[in-house]
Length: 364
Image (cartoon, rainbow, N blue to C red; front, side):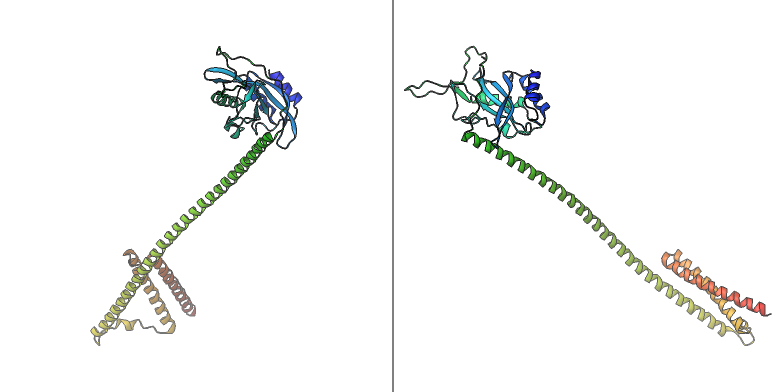
């Protein structure tokens, strides 16, 4: 069986099919079942949609079905098109001369061509010939596609009897009718045109769905990025508001600390003035005025006294700044700035004082 099929596909039909191994596997699987046991492979011409003819693989024989408890065999021709499995098979019911096609059949045309949902929804990845034969047998079992012709009588035509009655209930093998090349009539051309148009519309819809799906994927990705950016901006705005509120609070605290320090300096200055005035008021004429003792004798001595007093005053200021920082009346930033400024000034005063001292020592 497999050698005959291989010979037809590879020797009689070379280069016709893109995937000959798939065709051989599908046909072999079908013929290994009861449904395809009486289907025989052969190479026959097939009229394509563009009007050209091409030799293809055809399975010719009978397909079993069960109608009202009895087994029957329907003669069919199953063509495997060159684009199989991308395109579905083409099936014709071939009644023998003593039979005729059911005119009102919903799945078989007057030319014998089979139309069914399984062929319309054909998918190369999920559909195959075995399932196709099973669906076709089930459809024919519900509504036989052909029946025996009755002699013309005066009586009204009774309902058509089922094809191929078997009194014993056992299937009877009917030899396949001789192959007759199907005529290209208008109905067949119309059916082929409908099939081609349906395939083109299906491909166009699939392409449109794929492009739409890709566009949606890109839009969703961009939307997620925009939402993430919006969340980041909102977080930065909230953080900026917090920093602004913190700076305002620190500014208020700094202003309060500055006022406190100014008040303290004014109080210290006032107290010093009061003490100095009290010393002058309490002193007698015979007493020693301590402030008069420290009067410098020359300009350099006056400079040294002023610089020494400035350095000592800076030490006092740094001390009270330390106390203010400990009691949290000053912020660390203000404290460091003022200490740097006072330390720099004190260093200059000490350097100036050292220069005057060296000058006096060298002069003597």
